[in-house]
Image: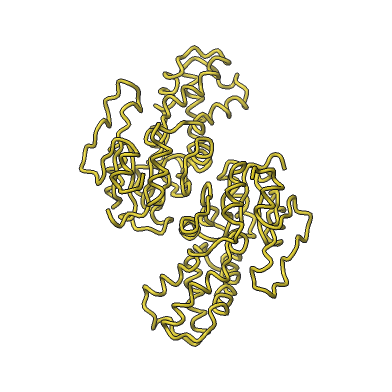
Length: 239
Length: 239
């Protein structure tokens, strides 16, 4: 672990609480356009289309596309599933609604923990989000990234190896000089296969009170922490 | 100007003093390897190969290459011009010497001015430097960028239009929502042709005490400032 120079963070779920944020941001649009669906259920349904949309890129069925574009397609599909016609909603509203993902709040330990980790490491997202999405999110919420590298830099979505390897490469670092930090065991397993160090942080309510997955580390990750403050303690970052 | 959301900064010369920094970083290597050349003269000679190296990429004679790679080629050529044999210098020393460009200091108003500008705008470099170079520079010197987008994101060197246009695009902004900030009239002219707003800041000693170029604004740039603090005043950023 001594050689680690950069901590690379999964973002949705690990840094920010997408479920409550997308629900909060969706509520006024659902009300305005008469879509009879609970905002949390809408957020979950929207997110459910996230992995399948990226899978089409990962398997080569479609070329790489920014997540803002995939989110927009998924928003329209989710609206149709809810019995609403997206064509009846003004374009400006759909565009603003789609930027719900730019307006998510970090978990309570997020900002303070990252600020501590930043004193000893380069900190950056390694997310499937695109640059504009992650940058607007950081600017609004005060997330103190050293740089924001969206997935268009690597032109690949996790867990495709290029997402990890190209990110290390543009940072001028060996994979083992980077530590992937995530609340998702699958993400860490893919990073480890690429030679990165791994840090798990539990986010037991990412999927709500009844969450059953990713409640604990499933491999011997180099660091296992309860939150970012605990991770800062374990990595020797001053309080 | 009211629509401007991001300030994009030329870096070498505008944010950091490359001439004195590269001289300072080169001095111990020149001494260690017995190269009889004044460090400032060496820095100037090294930098003199910067534009020709990028021009080969701009004109399509060679594919896009990161500036760290071009700097290394130019370092070896500059050593040969000085009568030294780069092959006689250990690889570790050449690699460390090449990273002189990662260890440059901002002008005295740089950090404080950028911190003020950051309160109202996204701030990021729009430099021909690569991500690792600009990120290491920022981390060492405390430059508070919101994100570091190196030229490998746009895959083009300024003043090629794509360098400006692709940067605006990954930020999710229209060109007119971005302001290019530079101490070089040529850079601003190219940015203006692409539809960006423009801000000039004078750096009258970038090339030393006898500088004759870029001492003043040569067009009616939207903002003309004496330094970043003056620019923050003119853009209404709180002190």
